[in-house]
Length: 629
Image 1: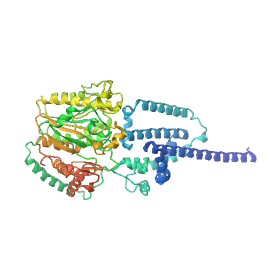
Image 2: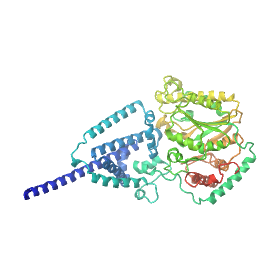
Image 3: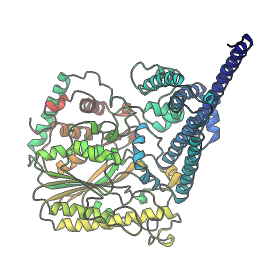
Image 4: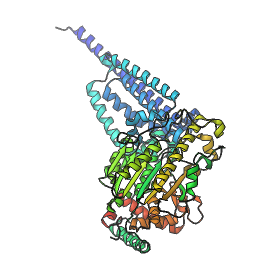
């Protein structure tokens, strides 16, 4: 039997053991908190361009409350990982690795695109190899070394996982902690839902800036900005949205369509229609701060004098290709969407079985529609989205017959892509709609060519810029060859050619010497092989491209296309914070600066866009997208 003294000693040891265990758990919690703080500071540092002064001011002078609230959000994620692993050292290692990766991505994206990392960007993890290709060789090497070091540390920690029981969370604690932290993370995920208490906590001190996510992240911090971009309805419901309101708009714009159609000779388009969205195609002669000795796009410049030509107002700078493509194919602008809708392709479009577009419109007219993208199918969920938009066929890098590259450029050339367009039309017996998104001019611009323009030819020392100029030259030559082939084509054909956005290759100095508008305007051409007069389009948005094709081909319009034509008369181009006034072509920064007439038409447009993307799609039932219904 256990004597009285032994029993007393055992109780003392149990008490000491429990006290020691609590002390260890408390120390582990503080180590987790220290890791969370380090990660949070690092994310702010990367978000602020590696400027420590901005981080210090943000934390201790300007936004202390928001910093503490955001630290709590990160702590919830840390506790969830701790409950999952049971090992504080593994948890801290995962947090440091994940935080390091997100911070690095933030810094690079801000540097290349002046844009922060969004939740929807996490989809791009599947494209890690492609993203690595956008970095310099030195950065790639450092990144790979960092990954190897982190992997080594993580493996070491796993091997050292044979810790004393007192150093690990017991299963009961892990289960309880996992349940509580999971509920917390689920609630955090509802950040954009009405009444969310976390959002209300931020609202006390936050200054949300819907029109500029760069400033939104800057003012409220990385974590708050990231949460602000969580999924929500694409648009807020406009006042007065109802079946009766949509019916009224249908009648209004059907009447306008009838007036337009009375003067049009074709009920449906009869020509082949080719959309060419040329990657990073811009006109460097438009820039201040760089003095070029040569014109890299002489043919394109000459073609502007004999076709519909002007500039496109691009939603993006240094990127954003999918959004410009979305606008051109659907006639829907990014401007009315909620600020957290950054990429429709990845956030909501692919969840639709079908969606009205140029593609579905032309399908009714008997067209065969083909999308061509000389890259893989996973970028921006293109395969799913093209199916939603109604394409009959999608040719990509692995299915293209013409897939040659130039020199050491890793991307399929424009010349090959245009040859694929010709091949598609040759194999078709009827009318074609072909939508091509090129890749030749995509970043990175280091060592794309061994034979490229010299400093003497260009007046430019920067190797990356000279590689980009060589890209443009090859694009210009390929376009000249395409135009020559189409001249002899028996079928009438219309080509809409535009650059999707400026590249960031010219750097901050040149960017700062030019207006924001200049850095968002790219060349636009609409030409045919059956003869059309020259027309100055000015600056227009991608949503109007098909309207211009219908004008050129004298084709009748649907009520939706009539709405777009009325909108174009009032606002030729617009994106968030950039609106071109029809009266004088001047840019203004707010809807309130537009004329009363422009605001009325824009409100009608908002109503239809809401109905399609977040409402009941009443306009589809009413025949808003059909001829004469």
